[in-house]
Image (tube, rainbow, N blue to C red; front, side):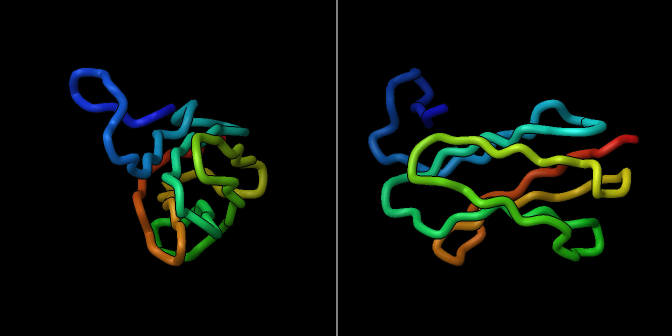
Length: 100
């Protein structure tokens, strides 16, 4: 995954990307893909319940494209929000649904 301009060419300035988890909804495991530009350090993906409580934290290797797998076995069924955080700053967030 690499950000591109509308015409499909590579972006002149790479920007962070947080993809929708796949599959969504999911019942056991789901994959979250991301892209971090050069200079991004100490990145993580945090998973929050709808009350804002952090329920999971996934290490991100970067910069560049990558993905992490969230194992839903320890979580309750419901909707969650996941956020890409790099250099102490929230870059993007998405919603996902865990079914049992």
